[in-house]
Length: 315
Image (cartoon, rainbow, N blue to C red):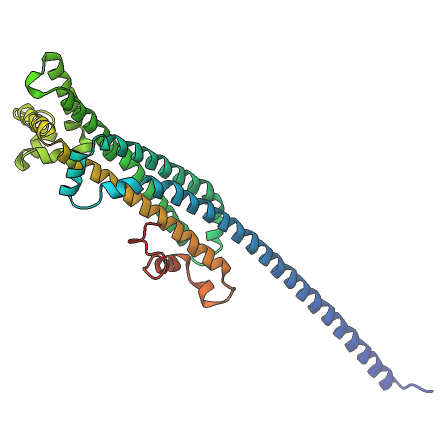
C-alpha cells in the first residue's frame, strides 16, 4: 500500500486531535474531581461547624432557662403589679426583702455565668460570622449585644443591687431601734447608715427623690455655704421615711433592681435568638434566598411575636 504525504498529514492531525481530546477530558475530569472533593470538604466543615454551634446554643439555652429565668421567678411574682401592691406585700410578708436579696444574688451569678459562657464561645462564633456575607457587620452586632449585657451587669452591681442591700441594713436598724429611744452611739450609727446611701453618687437616681428640685445642684456640688444644710435636710428626710414608710422605700428600690435583672434576662434571650438565626443560615442550602439573608435580619424576624416574641415571652 502506498501512502502519500497528504494522507500521512491527515493521520497525524487526527491522532493529535484524539490525544488533545483525551488530555482535555482528563484535565476536566480532574478538575471535577477536585471540585467534588472541595465541595465534600466544605459540606463536612459546614456540618461540623453547625454541630458546634448547636452545641453552644444548647448549652446557653439550658443555662438561660435553668439559671437566669428560674432565679427571677419569685421576684417576678412578688415585684409585679403597681407600687401600691408591691408595698403591701412588703408590709405583710415578713422577711420578704431577705428572700428577694437571695434571689437577686442567684440571678447575679446566673448572668455572670451566661456572660462568661458567651465570652468562651465567641472564639468559635467570630470566625464563623466572618465567613458569612457582611461578616464584619455581624461580628459588630454580636459585640454590641455582648457589650450592652456587660454594661447592664456592671450597672446592676454598682447602682441597683448595692442600694437594695444598704437600704435593707438601714431599715433593719430602724426596726430594731425606735427613733424616740436612740442613744448617742445609735444616733451616730444611724447617721452613718443613712449617709452611706444619701451621699453615694451611684444612687443619685433614687436619692434625688429626697431632695427639693431646686437644691439638687447644691446637694451634689462639693462646697458652698448651703451644701451641708441641704445635705443634712435630705438625710433627715430619708430617716423620717425609713421609720414611717419602710415598705414604700423597699418597693421603690427592689422593684427597680428587678427591672434591671429583667432587662438582663431579655438581653440573654436576644443572644439566643441571634445564635438561632446563625444556625438557620448554616442549615439553609447554599445559593438560596434564605442562605443569603443575614443572620441579623433573620434574628429581627425571630424576635417578633410569630417566633420567639422577645418582648413578651420570658423563655
